[in-house]
Every structure is written in C-alpha cells, then in structure tokens.
Image (cartoon, rainbow, N blue to C red; front, side, top):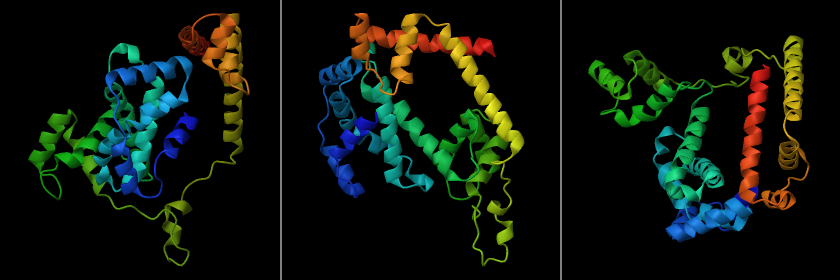
Length: 284
C-alpha cells in the first residue's frame, strides 16, 4: 500500500492543513456501483489506480473522524494521517461482494489506528492497557458534565455505564490529570539525576538477554522451516513467491502459472498461512 499512499499524496496539497481539508472535501464521492467496480478491480487485478480512487474519495470521512479526537492534545494533522493509514488498511481488506459500503467497513480501521496513536503518544507510560481501560480512556472526557474531578455519584454512574469498577474510573481519571515529567532534564538542573532517563536500566548489552533473544530467534526460525516443509508443493510455491522472494510475485502472475483465478490464489495463500500458523502452534 506504500505506492498507493504515494499516489494519494500526489493529488493533495502538502503543508497547509486547511488547504488539505478543503481539497479532500472537493473530491467527488463515489456511487455504490463505482465503489463496487473499483474495489473488484483492486481486489482481483491489484490495480493501484482503483485503490487510489477508493482512498481519495473517502479522505473527507477520515477528517471528520479525526476531528472527534482533537481533545487529546495531539495535532489534528497527525490524527488525520493515522486515520488515513487505517483507511488504506481497510481498502486493502475490503470485500465488495459482502454488500457493505466501504465507509461502514473502514470506520473500524480508521478509529483503531487513531486510538493506537493516541495511546502511544499520550505519555511515556501507557494510560490504557486492557480493553476495558481503553474504552474508559476514550469515553471519560466526553462523559464529564463539568470541569474538575468526578464526584462519588458521577464515578458510580460512569462505572455503571461503561461496565467497569468505580476504582478503575478513579485510576484512569488520576492518570489523565497527572502531570508529565521531563524525560531527560537539562544538565544545568540540580535535580537532573532524578529524571527518568537517569534511572532507566539499559539491557541492550545484557549478555543473558542477548543469548535468550538469539535462542528464541533460532528456535522460531527452526519451527517455521519445519512447518513450511510440511506444506504441499503448491502452497510452498505460493508463499515462497509472495513473501520469501526478493521480487514479490503478484496474484495475477501466480494465477497464470497455476491456471486458476487470482481470487483462488488469494484463497490458497490465506489457507497456507493459516495452516502454517497451526503447524507452528502445535510445535510449541
């Protein structure tokens, strides 16, 4: 999808967020039939021009979604960029034959990328690690009826609505109100030795950890090789051509080799990957 992103960027203004937003809202929307035809073309023929049209026609939707997350202290441009990544992932996975419009399918992928970006950039220490905490994190701000800390009744109401414990609400509110510490303090600061950068342990050259990582890599490589050899010849050829060769073979090229459709090659590829995962899991 890297080429696809480049194609999309070539049609849009760079540098001004306002100009970008104005441009994407000028782009024509697709009819259901146009969307279907483009999606089929990309899915079966890997036509990047079709993928480009699908992406660019839905960029306005990413902007709308991204603006809903503007209250987390992160640049809207960055949120839009992450949302665009989610949109491209959605286009890559979209199956037009299921009878759902791309915008309905893509919203999950767009929000997922934006959520991950916010979580990773909110603080050095992640504020949300479990599914329940993430749900709470993205709903806590909007559920506040006033500025300041929650009252006891408000905490209980939020906990009930989001199906979490009151203590979890209090912990998340505390994290959201916490003040960030400078990771690497100025050398002239008398308390520079207290900054996190001075207290973090460096395990990058730990001999024990290096040996463990090497052993784990060797073991995983061995398991992958053994599992790969258990696949049938056709599956081996497809995976070798698609993922293990320096020049990736397209679905169309493999379809001609095996005299089947590109869709059938895609199905065989997915089946081979799933079988490979199963073989490796059973080997553990």
